Image (cartoon, rainbow, N blue to C red; front, side, top):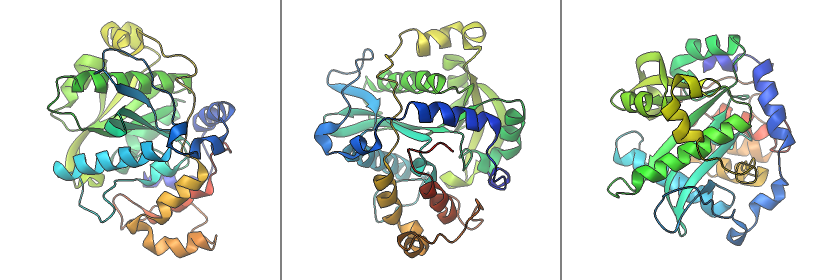
Length: 310
């Protein structure tokens, strides 16, 4: 991650996916309307009756998703408690990141974030910088599946909900020009991702600071060759297609990104700088003292409006 942040210019693959995202950008103002303006439910498969699988598109969706991730991560020892009761990373403040949610009424029951490669790079570069850089040199466009949390672990329908979110994630990534999806998972879970979806391991086991030094391995899913490499995985993720409207790009609007950043305790040192529109750093430099909510990264994210391609 730090190596990536030292680059001020955006690589060609990143620029290409950013332009594609920009061309499909809706009116950002419409995304910040009250809850009644939330996106319509997606009819996507055998989820429990009443469950909607969709992109977060209103404040209620994002709040519910960030709270669910916080609850799941603190319960399993992957994050320390904080006064806000939410887990938000600087990557989620970028216009190249989208949050996917499965909701039951007003409550998120499962969520993940699709982090397309952009100005801050990818979250797992904190521990797999060289491996990611190697893929970029091959001209591959990357995106990361991040902040996956399931609040229905004891429910029989939980797996089908996760599967529907992964389907929406994979198909939307493909629509945005992504070549490979990457993810950092616990070593015990890696065989499932490899067997069921067709992910392949590209990074050895390491301690991951963003989740309190829990062990992780890096996996990649080749979207371009999945059909021939893993037909069953392809059928599970692409066998039933979402419509173009369901896959439409839905980033967090600028005013909400700013509000979330200003309210994050870990950004207290940066708050005055943001309010005065005088960021502490004009170049993307990682904060070496912070493992997760890096102040400088969040400030960089806030500099990039959702209506402008990187």
